Amino acid sequence: MEIDESITVTKINLQDGRGYLLVGWQPKSFEMYLYLNDKLWKGRFSQNRLNGFSRNLNLSEKDYYDKIKRCLSQERDDYCYELKSGFFYWKRKHKDSIIMEGFLPMELDMSPTNTRPDLFEIILVLNKYLKGKITDLKRKYETVKKDYTKCLNDTEEFLNLKIGMEKTLCDKFLNLLSIKKSKVDGLQKCTLKIKDDAKVKQSKIHQFITS
Image (cartoon, rainbow, N blue to C red; front, side, top):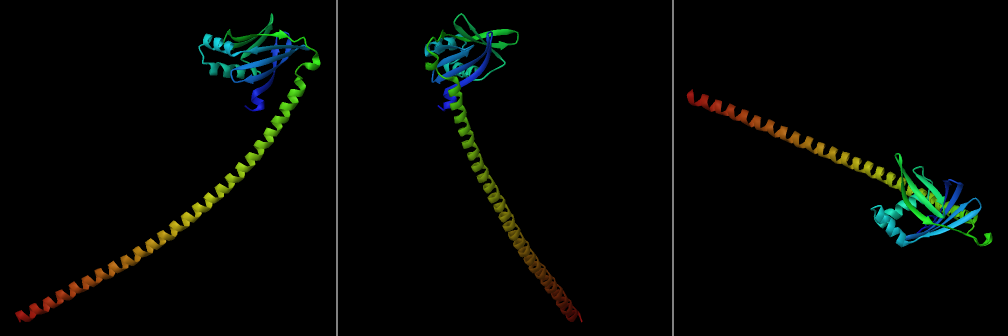
């Protein structure tokens, strides 16, 4: 799993203000840290909880997990978030109703600030990674673009060569047809001349016999 897929940081609105969700994603579970008003709340979403919620919503574990990941890894207008009585809730807005799709017990982290996950440092690491990924994608794009241009030019060259060969072949075929036609015309004229000569001879023979 890529680092930008295994760790996400999302800014969300809660009833007590603007917060930041830091989520460490694992195959069928995740750990969540909520930074809100200079406090840090943390919780863990286990595989057992995944199994229970997916059954309640009549979804497969994979579909439900993907749904959670979309919900918690990006700010969405069709969801609302709430931290209440030590529980973090995510609820989907559907027309005029609200559907509670999941919740997670959270505990306030009372450890010293310097031992907590540093959100700023994590964002810097993610930003550096994403910049590197973008640079790599740009390089790959340029390579693909270059290969595509070469392939396009080769294809055009091949098509031009093919058209030229077909034209040459067609010209030769037409020339051959013209030669054949000339020969056929010559044979037809020769045949007509032979027939005419034969008629003349028959006429002379007939005149000789009847005279």
